[in-house]
Image (cartoon, rainbow, N blue to C red; front, side, top):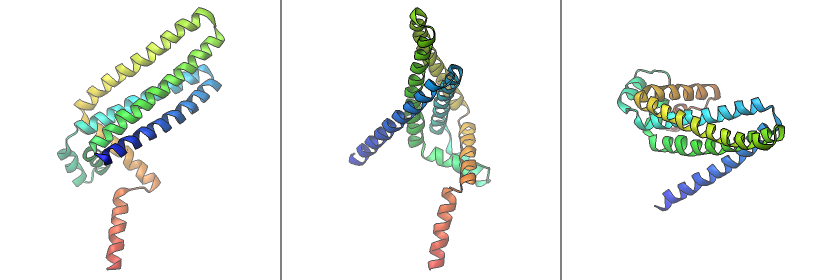
Length: 194
């Protein structure tokens, strides 16, 4: 229990720090840019939250056996997809809770900035109705997007996880950060020392 409590505190602190930093950066950017670009930033943040929610749900719903078979057949991204499935509780927690909550907080901050911009430009009753409309739109698009995303994630879990695995594999190939290669290097190092 103490170890789990420490991990929960660490996740909470990381979430706090990331939310504060991203809210400040995105809010400042939205406040200094064209209102339509601010709307584009808002849409990108909401889409990111929905996308990560899909990956987290798919990782929890995917079957290990077919992905393991694809990994054995050296299908591109299958090893990374297998890691996602085998660590599905952590993946779902990070994707659905941490990233999802951060995107929700940041989208609210950007939405508030857009409302302030509308208030400055229009003033009066238009700003009051704009605030209700913007908040309602953010909520409805986020909830509806996640509802559709969850259905896709459950019905096509293996395909979604494999797609995520291919993205991770591409990232690892471009950056040279591969867990498999690190393990092989450690094993090779032991072999040379013996």
